[in-house]
Amino acid sequence: MFTQDMVLEKVLVCLRELLPDAREVVADSDLVNDLGIESIKMMDLLMTLEDEYDLSIPINILMDVRTPRQLATSLVASIENGHGSL
Image (cartoon, rainbow, N blue to C red; front, side, top):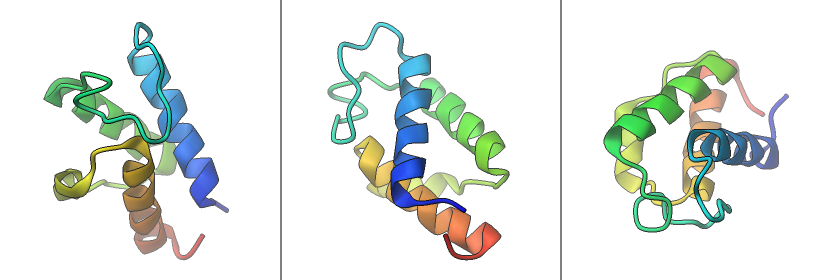
């Protein structure tokens, strides 16, 4: 069973591992402006999360995602579509 908080925490953990030099990674950090996420790193993050949750994340979810919290919200929707409700 997944909760919004669990998914958000996993996103934050993955980001911290991906960006060990980042000053602070929090739920409302701007992925581009605060964390400097480039497209390659974003794809690495998505692949890690796909493996973690055994799902395929549609790339178009990134159009509306600017923060880890927004990414987690989008992932919850994908998880619900792939595995049933949380």
